[in-house]
Image (cartoon, rainbow, N blue to C red; front, side, top):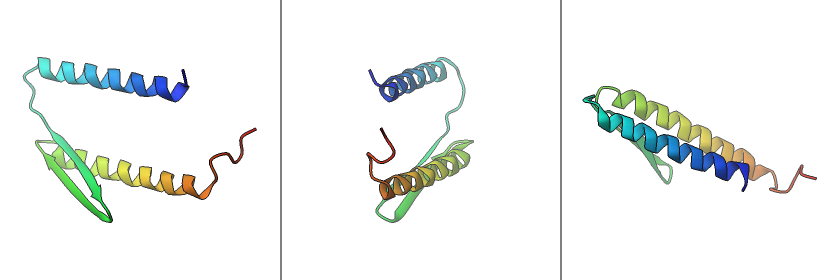
Length: 81
């Protein structure tokens, strides 16, 4: 199996474990994120840390788009032997 597939499976399992730990306590919930619809970002957040989570997801989204654009400039097979 490819290393990235194993990493993806590991991330999903860690996420499931974190959700399970969060459900077991009496802690409050916070959430935030963004959806990119064309050139228009829709940012949302709720709870105590909702704004911080929304900002973090926006920064990560911009980073992912920048990496995608940098990757698109180079052919996929370039540099591999």
